[in-house]
Image (cartoon, rainbow, N blue to C red):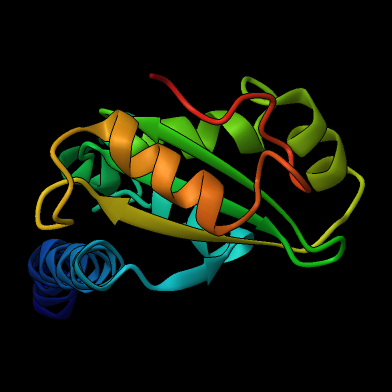
Length: 156
């Protein structure tokens, strides 16, 4: 009986500690991606995007607290095409593209198995005044209008 009580107490103490460790680890990865504009795979993005601190059904996504205003670059590595977009909630917007609620051409290629990577660039610290300018810069830089998925050169 004593052993059973000790085991239950240990589980009750370890589970929250593990959950906090996992949350801190994921937050660290997200901070690295945000602060350093690291290119990550779409699979990595989806794992980080949908991670929850305690894996609970009603727990919020960790990335929800890390949403920021900026630009995202979706790179189809298979076809060497780019899509550049902007959002005040970048994580949510990229998630939309990969789940069929964004650019239809990007989603079809993603769904059909093309290899994608993602770069997230925060407006803050970018040297640009607004999202429109930042987006236009990257559309031009990656030729996303001429040879990519973008249908316009960006907002004016």
